[in-house]
Length: 83
Image (tube, rainbow, N blue to C red; front, top):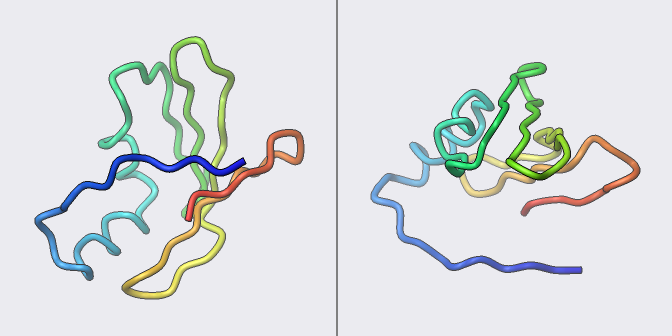
């Protein structure tokens, strides 16, 4: 299954955005209001829970500075990636 979201323009340089998104602590800042839990597990892994959803754990699987970051689930039961 492939899902696409609305595209937005970010008023930051590519390098600033890459730096922001490769620091997993920053993902808490961009979580929706329905976030119930956020936990940094390691330098490249974090877990979160949204209201009414099971916990999701994501890990930075691949990165190429400053243009590309892939986040992927750490669970074999619900395997997906965000490119």
